[in-house]
Image 1 (cartoon, rainbow, N blue to C red):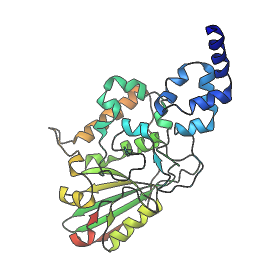
Image 2: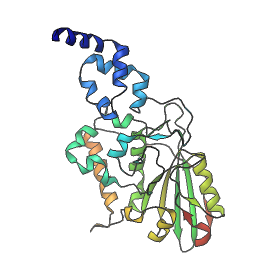
Image 3: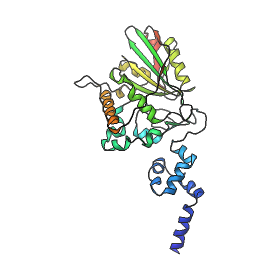
Image 4: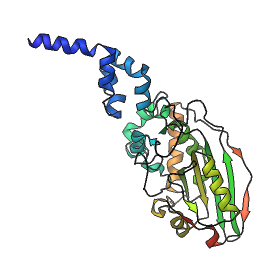
Length: 295
């Protein structure tokens, strides 16, 4: 009797349609790792079924982006804090600057070799579903003379969407860690999710809002900005890694150099995205006209 039930269960799990229904109920981490180690059949089903690949953020969901449907990759959020929002829909969460020292393989060096394999799954994962297709960079320089806004844009990721490997490499390739107070990843679009907005007009405010509305992901780079201005932007100034060591480099700059070296040792080539420079803007600094409020 027991053998008969075991055989029936085995036969049921050998039917792709039944197995697929079971796999659909697994959490993302189990589906990505444990389930694919069971046998070749399970691995093949997972890798060849579009709905399962979409659940793993490895295949794009063919739906138009809107804030009600936008879901951020929950597994990446735990491994790359400050890169990906912790909440799936990111309704209310403090805006933080990118902190390279919080990345999982930096916190746990013993995991480095697994993360830096050329075929590591995290590099191929989409940052969100539906995918982000348009990425831009905004550099805002604030000094005693005024505000400069320099804008750049990457070629659209029309085919498959923005993958984590591309986003991570773009952050690493940014020399801004050597001379800025922080880099922040904003999620824009027609209705931005976590992007601060200017509460009044002006050239800088208008251009800032324009590029945020036209792009899905925005790298916001701030130079010469005090903690007070960060707080006005809704960015947690405590998250800014500006501590300097004896050689004058910040914690993030040192971590960036370490990751560069680790890439070279692993034989990885950093992906470099061509950022097309757009028109720069400038206006006299007026605290009231450039104040921003966090969402």
